[in-house]
Amino acid sequence: MSFTEQAIIFSCAEEELLGILALPEQSEATGVLVMVGGPQYRAGSHRQFLLLSRALAGAGYPTFRFDYRGMGDSTGEQRNFEDVNEDIRAAIDALRANCPQVERVVLWGLCDAASASLLYWDATLDSQICGLVLLNPWVRSETTLAHTRIKYYYRQRFLQADFWRKLLTGKLGLGRAIGGFIGTLKAVRQKGMLTASDQILPFQKKMARGLQGFPGQVLLLLSGNDYTAKEFLETIQADMAWAATLEQSKVMRIDILDADHTFSSGGWRGQVEEITKRWLKTRVGK
Image (tube, rainbow, N blue to C red; front, side, top):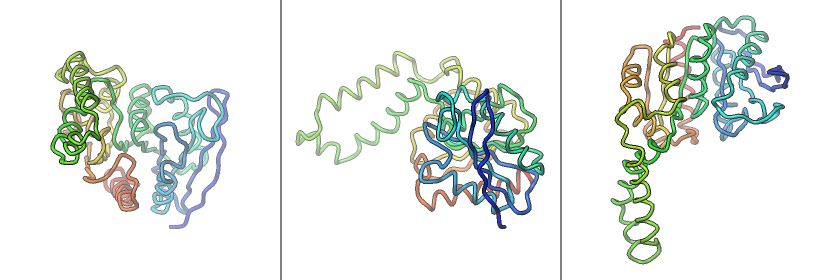
């Protein structure tokens, strides 16, 4: 299906934000708001968000990607993912104002943008939101980082011949290697192993609460070769609220086994696009 792209300037707390709307020739009633994760702008790593928006618009879904205040071409001071609720709400309003056919909105986010999606719904209970697409959600804490390093990084390193070759030939400092491992062990012991939900920091609790209470459909995409995704899995295993929610029928989880954090290859990116389109069609509706 053919579509057009147009730049839209909209307001948020007396600042001017810039977004790009990919508008299909025949729009469905479901629109998609692509949320930016990390300190980057609306194109995304390796133009992922630009290409995703075009793919979804080609399937009939109006798709809007934008810059938060203080990022890209938007004015204002830069802020982190815990402080973008006003930006998200303003972007939803801009999407619907420029595409009146849109009756409901799906939030699509990678990394801390996935976290911001859950935090937004938890704070606002916005009835316009009918679906969430969450890719490698960010749940970082000192404990999850240390625990993940021990379970995945050091375990793999100690089984690699290259690690021992460098260590024995002096190319890898013995003190540095052992010191890093011991430091990680101390971090885990000081914070305690992940066994209770009270060890999850406040924003993670809000995310879990948001996911648990969200009445719409959820698509969870996890990369197999990504420590952020592994930290998320560790958090799920340690917290019954997370685990129980992800077992609900509203949540569809798909793992892309060899993919990295940003789905950087054309093949991985294409899988994300196709999975998203299929989920929109079969689980959310038009």
